[in-house]
Image (cartoon, rainbow, N blue to C red; front, side):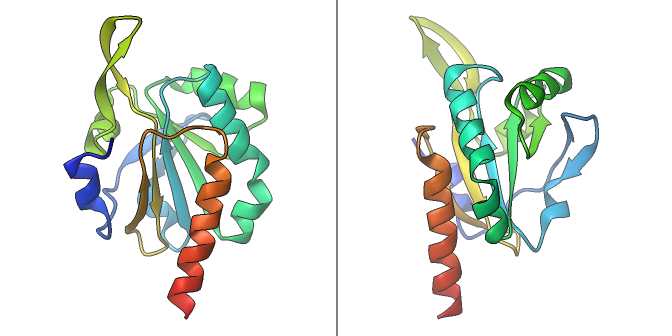
Length: 165
């Protein structure tokens, strides 16, 4: 479910941040200005839905590159977990570690969740499509992993076509 905070981000500059990737290198969102950025937040490495979502982005590598798009996955898992996840799935994009959930809170994806009747806090699967100028162009909340990467690519193409007409 889209929150007021998320909805108010549409058309506005995406909040910048700096996080560590699976190899220990620091990445800032602003490093990717000039490209489309698929900023996706996911609950946990090596879980079924997160694995499916990551594989879909991996498998659409060439289509994303054709659209000048980079993928950045964010979860609260640590760097070593991300490293293992990348290696196990042969991921070809960057995973960022947000262990304190600061960026997750900034993007309002850190939510109270319920699992088997128990309440806990965690990430609601959400994707932000950020345009080359650094503005939030589209928001996908409560994402279903299957088909998500293809939908994002389709939307990038529509937005590029709309901007050039």
